[in-house]
Length: 342
Ligand code: MG
Image 1 (cartoon, rainbow, N blue to C red):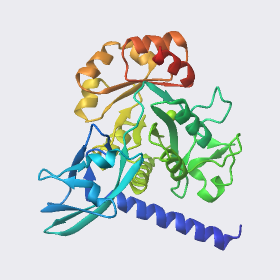
Image 2 (cartoon, rainbow, N blue to C red):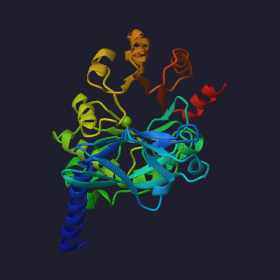
Image 3 (cartoon, protein in one colour):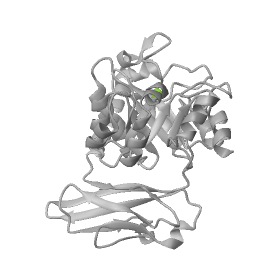
Image 4 (cartoon, rainbow, N blue to C red):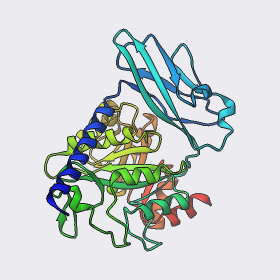
């Protein structure tokens, strides 16, 4: 590829990323993004500016209503369709002008079991972890969630991979144009977050459990901003839940999007601390929870979600099921699905 073309591609990436970041600063948000025939009230519309009233726009506007408390509801008839989601434009008019944003409201057929496929479902099927195939396998199996890891290239493009390096190449120090040439062992291209989210949003059964990796170059906050911006840009809020080892990353996600579900991974904060910082729960190594069994009950009393990683053997999986943990992240989703269904 010649240098001019590379330069142009990098410019396009940079412009896109910049646009996405500004979209995350949208003045409007919702407290929830899903509906079902038994849950017609979707959530409350929130605004950073004071708004006199909200108006619904776009081709799907007639399917929804807003009440005086700014609660958004879907009409019962619209929930009977097999439509996976509706896009809705919400407009708020206030003294400082008009704010407008588009929201994707998802038919809630999300699976309620304890099973999160760690880096997708790849082991039994012999595919590559953190690939689109491993994500689709987790969806086909019927996992509640499929987990994946996000790093940022030297020019701020987001890629899915567990390790900070791939084939000896440091993701953080390499431009997207070079990373885009890399192939996974199953023949897929190294996925971007954009591609991964778009793939995951083709269905409405499995949540996308997004791990923001800690930057070795001190760019974790910038990475976090870009991740949240992209989730908002793609209107993926209904699908995505966040996890991170860096506590400041967890808090940053909540600062950017207070209704986002965020769980902490590193195992060194009590449920009381997580609650004080308004995180949604913990996702701790199973050995931490075996040493601190009381945290499971304490977390439940505080309405925090409980999640253990990465549990792969039947006795330990069963132990956590017996403790009524909310979720277990595993390389053996097939085995865990068998245990939860019996
Ligand atoms: Mg991970």
